[in-house]
Length: 292
Image (cartoon, rainbow, N blue to C red; front, side):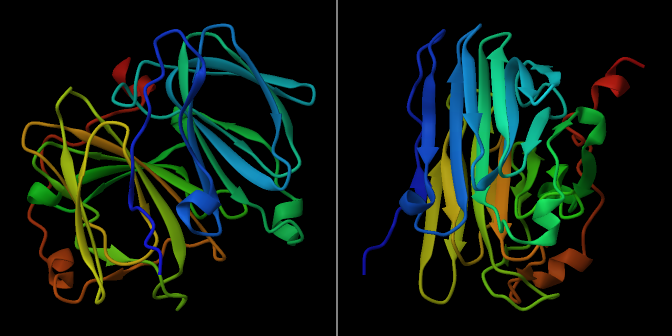
């Protein structure tokens, strides 16, 4: 049996150039749902496309762009980087032609999944711009397992299969903890999901570790800026090294519109024993809060 990689590295796109730092298809990732890419657009570059049978969410990592579909046009951003504030994004359902012009040099996470297509829910979906004020926020955990969750496309969002959030973890802290999994279809306790972790760090030389384990295997991966971890199954906690704040974009998709997960029974007790939250969170705030 061929064992597919868990960790994927970005390629460098030179400053001022257009190209893909990552382009991971479902076939390359060994699963059914998620296609994940990170695209660099030079200032003024035009990107036109059609979602076809997929639904898409384009998350602005850096820069600014204008997007148009039909007779509607919107400005998305600006965002200096992922640590600058809440996200800007665009949701595009299946069957949507789109046209993007980069207003600044930009990086965009292109998150896609095959739409269910025939469902009544999918038929009613519409494109929309997601602004910082549209995003949810949660401080989760406590002590050195505190992290900040910023929802972009939560289960309640009018999408088909895609779900996305950004997670901020202060240096030295644990995240996705207690260890949990979502590889079994047993709602409402747990649902089966494919999941991407796309990592960014504030500083050069920063790193963290993600463990992926179950009863058959146990892997620990060193992750750095621009890395992707494909979580196909098993428990998958993360810790960032002391002194290095971490960000990751979670992209999830499956048959059910839920993020229900099961904790590892060996560590589940910690969810009911959290100390007070780490005072370093929230790490990012909405732009309108900054201006007050």
